[in-house]
Image (cartoon, rainbow, N blue to C red; front, side, top):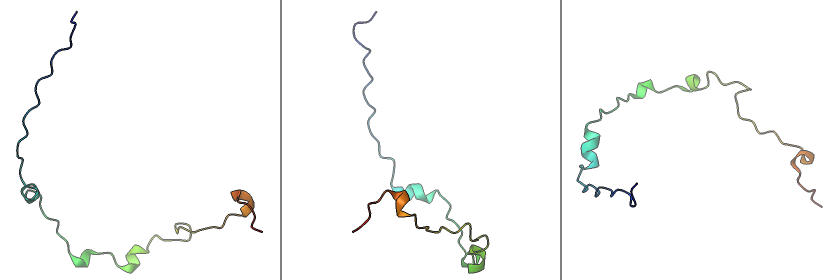
Length: 69
C-alpha cells in the first residue's frame, strides 16, 4: 500500500503549430455557382397552410393573466 499518490509527469512544453492560414490552405475551397441557387418557386415548393408557422391567440382564461381594469 502506498502512502502518497504517484507523481504526475511534468507537462509537455507548448510548441508552435502554425498560423491559421496554413491550416486553411489544406482545405479545398467550395465551388459556388450563382446559377445553382434556388429560385423563388423552388423555395416555396413544399410550403402549405400546415407547414407555415402561425401565431394563434390564446384566450386569457387559459393563460392565467389577470384582467385589466
